[in-house]
Image 1 (cartoon, rainbow, N blue to C red):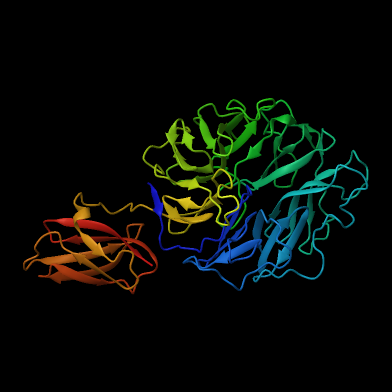
Image 2: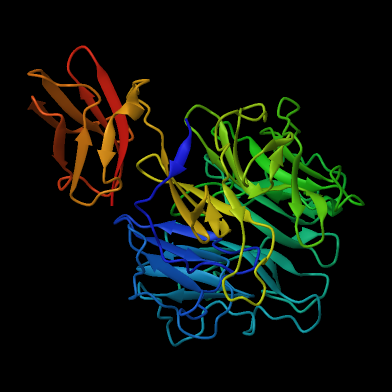
Length: 492
């Protein structure tokens, strides 16, 4: 199944910027709105902001605005009746309109988190639990100023105060060790990565698994020799929560950089780990590469996000222009063994990253940072780009799946539909003289469900009302029992 640009979602060209975290967090509301945060700025006449909320058609929800200086918000989650976001070393709760409370929240400038000596404290990632307590991963001093006794995972109450019933997790070696990733598994455990050789005394360099009680799961053993292999868990596709790319067999998708090969095609690898931590040799991703127009050099491509398809295939987003030599616009589909799926995402994709202020028209190499699944089977794709499949679309695009239950007639292009896209009505011209035959009109949504049905007799040109349909893409099918014609139509 392929995915196509959705012209029913047309936000103003506002999301841009050279930051690698541009449009990095995408939250999908139950009412069809989308909240987007990241290290981006708005094109003129809009001002620099930390985040923006869109309605389902792409228009901006002006009721949402985070006040204060424009600082990059690379991570944001739904929290209570609003959101919780992270700026460097600080977690900040805001209400539904983006307004923070007056009292400080989890802030490392407050005791007991700040140490009296380096290494400095860090907030890298957090997860909100069902009872609204918060796990915070990074590097802290919750109960000591001892340089060798930093802690890497703490739990706080909903007001940000330390949860004294939680024994802070400790990693060891090197002295500046810290946790970077923190993701739940399907069976209630937790995967963590970071700069460490030991976690609670158990040797498992760079990556480990915690049990539901946060003790170390010793049945998972890191396959890497030491912490210098720079292991990261690839982000998953959940539209409301922060999940890693962990499939229903508890296989884990990671990227790693072998020491000494940081900028070569040999150093960066994308791997799948089995439930015991061993490397899955049956999964082999082809060579990913991109060309940097600024310095004229080729670099190894990266996978930043993975969305799992129902058939077991993988949609990958990241920074790459080719997969095994085949052109792809920073988004592609892989089979379960890591091989490229042909004829899917084979168009332009996210292929351009131009800035509009005139000072520097080429901001950087385009990339896809985030892919989330939508209830209608489509995708919301965010990242650093200004064009997608030839459409001016800055940093955020919605994709629709091709019809899966409707067979398209080979003569479908002979059915003329106009205007298309349309708001209220479309006219269509029959490809053959209808005479006195009865023609059946069926409209299907992209899941194959019938959403509209009419009939017509003896007319070459007919009108169809779209007023009962929601915004989106549909398939119009016209048949008379002998011939059948299909054409995609778009309601905006």
